[in-house]
Length: 375
Image (cartoon, rainbow, N blue to C red; front, side):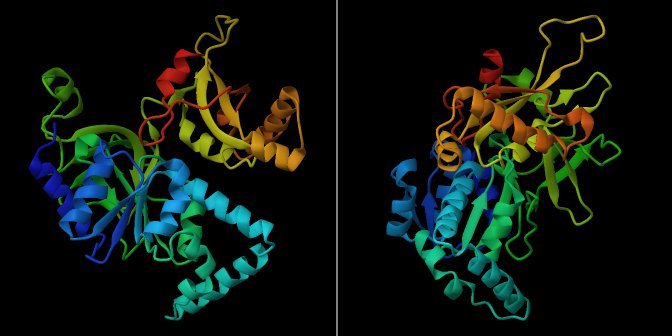
């Protein structure tokens, strides 16, 4: 249950980190019934006198961007990563990638000297995004750091936020005046965020106390007491750490964590991010699979399994027409390369090829519980 005070407090808290002006136009892609979009994508711009352009649907994103010419986009990783891939594929096909990389280095050096000409140099890229884009805000799930760095390199401010519906929703945000790519930001004004029972790496469950915190779950006092302690802190269920400058880094969800027989914690999101970088992979989900033929010794040992949706269009473009077995072998070879970057207990031991799209939430996150029920 959220009240007007929660929503107003969130708008005020966010406004201290990011300035929205009457001349701004936000591009709305996410469903308005979701707290993230309704508060930050709708109420925030209205409160600041800005306008909103509503996307007609996912297939019309590029067309609508050029029509609406927004200055800011509120989005989730899947959408911004998709735009990043499409734009960079165009650049590579036109054989301008080396030139773009050279210009990025050159304009970064100029910017450090106080001269910013990025909008002029990368005008062609800007035009694909409407021509006026200055801010991209991404939240709801982890995102590949290189996407944020690339946006900053071409002159677009990339901000990350963190929160839940229970916190109405933004609890942390990157200040536009001091961005930190890879972090989901600092606690917003008025919010107190701490790590509960941190381990040797400083990681633990993220606890939040804030004026934006919900009144509770509707007619469910028992569940409310489970997540909000006597001191008024809400247990987010997310695992992360806070650095010396107050920036928060999310490493996984407590309910998704895979615990090995030796008591080691594996966060699926870390491995998924590496697998999703494979060109031939569209999406992936990591989980611990119970062995079919268990022995007493193996009773508790789970097999780290990757369920992968191949990018068949990309595979055909790069490798030609492959059989299902060849697709599987190709992806398994690439996953073995990923394993080399991981400590041994995190290595993927099993591959499942996903048939059909993953079922997702309104913020494009895979519904893990539904996938695991199909295991």
